[in-house]
Image 1 (tube, rainbow, N blue to C red):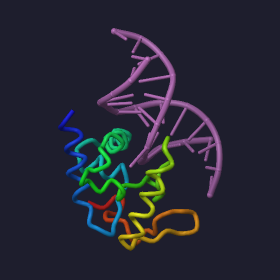
Image 2: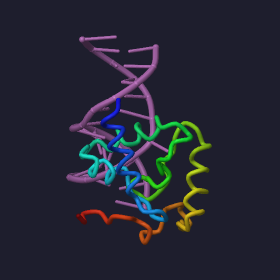
Image 3: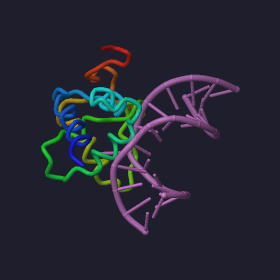
Image 4: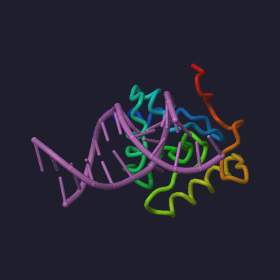
Length: 105
DNA sequence: AGCGTGACGCAGG
DNA sequence: ACCTGCGCCACGC
């Protein structure tokens, strides 16, 4: 269960504080291109005390993805705002905070 | 071993 | 901008 998961963690850890990245971008960087879903699953499986900045990963719309438990959803928003990340009225992270632009790299 | 499900993403219409 | 379908792949039943 390591590899895939470890790779995802590694990429997540490379996201600069105060910035965010999409599941797709993380997947791409982890060598799991096209399997963004797996990134979501991998992060979902992380223990709550994990040092991995899972909150810096959002969906392609720059929004915090809906999940079964609303709790983590709120926590993610808090943690990001704590790092200075701002959201627009629709709950999307402003493009300015994306660590890596799409198509770039 | 098959099947549904899910923190996703992209191409079409 | 909105909705739909399809691809992806690990997990649990």
